Image (tube, rainbow over all chains, first blue to last red; front, side, top):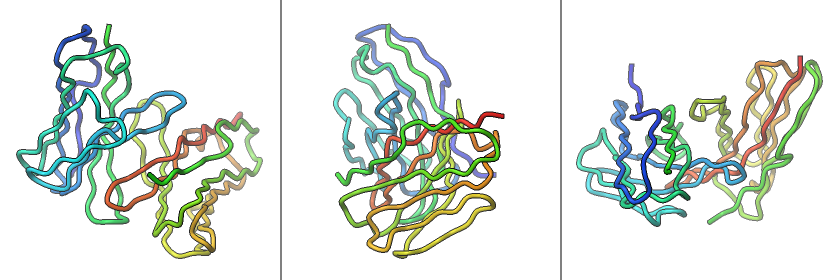
Length: 112
Length: 108
């Protein structure tokens, strides 16, 4: 069965370190998204991609970057982790407009 | 960015009661989606509404898209503990923008 997986599920890192969160989907979807979820803010869009070599900034993109070298993967990199980036991160993928978005199980990141 | 306002933020009711949660905006949408998220999991799509005035039913859940396509509601009949979760509405165009959600708790 097709799926979307995130790794790691939990990570603790120190302030200033570079961190990469992985997202891998086997749906062959062109569209992929990264969100962070915090109490009181809901799901906020960080970056998204419509296909290989395409990346776009979302509403909270500062301090984050993504790259899309193939259809299956959209890794999210925190260039220099900050305590404000402690959050739960969700990756999603989808097909065309109005179709269902499938979410990973999330990565809980703690920056100390 | 088209803002989606969800209300109430929190709702705790007894099993067997009925409830309605709302998703409102000042913008017109081509479609709206409703997702449910359980603790420790990612959101899962419940329904997509596309046509103004559209009503869709999913067992005890009834979804309605406003005539003007600016708002939507979710009505749950005879709520059960399994309905507990975070209900999110989302606007889907080239990206997916979510409201902050309604956190629903059904007491047994």
